[in-house]
Image (cartoon, rainbow, N blue to C red):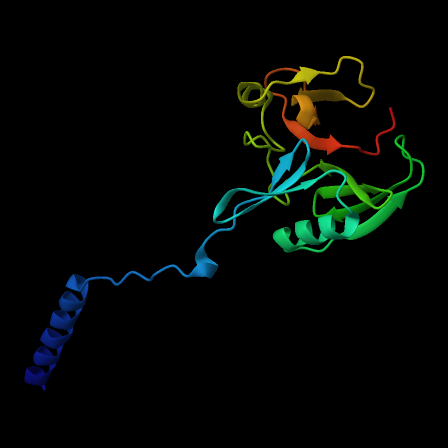
Length: 190
């Protein structure tokens, strides 16, 4: 019995050592494995990049509701929750909320966006998003603090003819973080 045990043990050890030296075969990445680029919150709307096109499609403010909503929800692969407010400072407004992103519509046109969280993960063209620290924001894009804002520590980043991106900070010092960002027309009561 002892003689049959050792040859079996030797075979198992040899097999284990052989498998350690065998080369690993790498799997090729298929189309489903390629990460889709994130949409970008833009002063003129929402930019939906494609994998093979660096500029992608800009869903501009003023775009009709149906195609704007179809393009954005298809890219984000999420549906939204509808809402409306008849008493907005900018006039009656309808909303579609997708996670922490709110799309604003007036007169059947896409007119603005508000991002007040991390889902979906959206950033400005400079890579600034919710949670960014003021020190980082200032290094990447020019901002001006709105001294007369009644809504909190509000900032604006003017983009000339393209519009502006605004937002709210948790504190006015260099450690203040972005709590929310917006572009276009929003339902703020000032």
